[in-house]
Length: 115
Length: 111
Image (cartoon, rainbow over all chains, first blue to last red):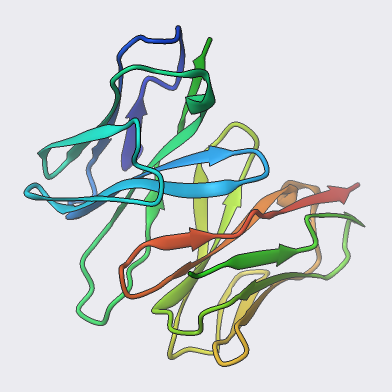
C-alpha cells in the first residue's frame, strides 16, 4: 500500500462549489504539506503543518483552507472554487530532523478541474 | 527570495548516452537539495537528497552533485534507458523547511 494517499484522484467541479481534497499517510511523519502544480509554473506551496496544532500559510494560500484532523490526515478545502484553481494538487510528508531539513515524500496527486 | 532554475527545459537523447541535468539556485543558505522524478499523470518520486554539508550522492546509475557556494547542482544519468524518460525536478530546502522547486527538465530517451 502507498505511504501517502490522496482522494479523490480526479475531480471535475463547477465554479462556486465547495470541494475538499484529502490526504492520508502511514509514514508516521509529523509534517504535512499541500502543493499545486501548474504548467510552466512548477510546484508551489499552499499550506503546511508541522503538527496537529501548527498550521502555516505557504506561498499561495488565498482561496484555500486546511484542516489537520490527526497526525495522519491533512485536508485541503476550496470554499468557492474558481477556474484558475484548476491544477494538479500534491500532498507531501516529512519527518522532523534535528539537523535541519528533511526529505519530503509525495502522494500521487489529485487532478482538479473547475469549469 | 529563493529562485531555482533548471536548464535545459527539455532534452532528447539516444539510448545509452550519458547525460547531465542542471539546477541552479540563488540563495546558498539551504539545508538540502532534492532531485525528483515525475512521470506523466503521476506523483513525484524522490531520487536523491543531498544535505548541505555533502558534495554528492549516488544511487545506481544516478549521481547528484552539489556546489552550495556557487548555487549549482547536477544530476548525472549514466547509460540512459527509455525507462528514464520523465520530467526531473530539482528542489531546495531552506530554513523555513519549505521546498522551492525548479520548473523541471523533460527528458526523452529514444530507443
